Length: 88
Image 1 (tube, rainbow, N blue to C red):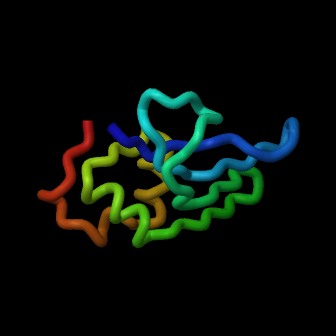
Image 2: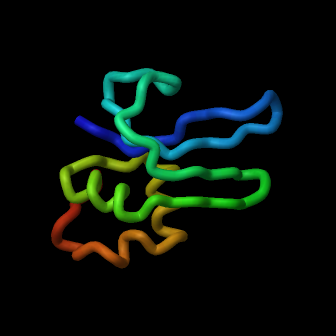
Image 3: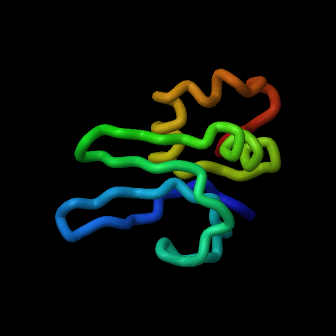
């Protein structure tokens, strides 16, 4: 199963995160399938590769709670039909 989750990068006390598609069994810093976005909580910046995110969501990838909140704020779910995806 594939999840969309955050992968930590950056310096100590100055964390930034990549949003990646990654296998569930991989650790947080493990090898990702694809980088699909970037999130900086300090500067409140977000970059999303929307076509890549939609590709993984349509194929059953489940976002984590934090990634789901980021995607809701950027209105990515508005581009999907609500009947297509079910989140647990």
